Figure 1 (spheres, rainbow, N blue to C red):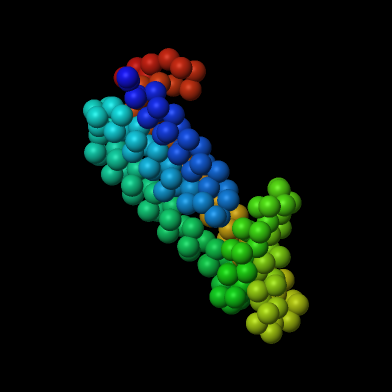
Figure 2 (cartoon, rainbow, N blue to C red):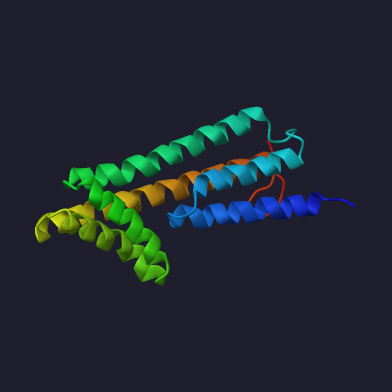
Length: 170
């Protein structure tokens, strides 16, 4: 029995989970995409997608991971947030996921505000912290999506197919 189709299916599922994870903070989005793309390279015995490409993909994954940590913190710190606001924003993003798109958008803000209020800050400072944490998470999500699609695009290019399904020349 040829297991290739199952390996391709597994790789696709991991990549899709990674794309979902770039928007939902509970999943490690870009690292999952890297794992899925590594499986794609493994399926081809690292012939088409070699170790140089794998190294570039790994570097992009590390950059995305660093952005995840720095963007939220820098956005919140820029507007004077405490670590409670950062934890609140993260928790709010996770809880917000269960409330659909409005929850995903408002969850980090509400969580940061509540986290800041629990530390004794006034409402104005809590609101600033919420905006900063929210802006940082939005920036991190946008940057992670850009990196994720760059990684996927690089592998599609290396596999020799354009978006319309034909071989890439040159």
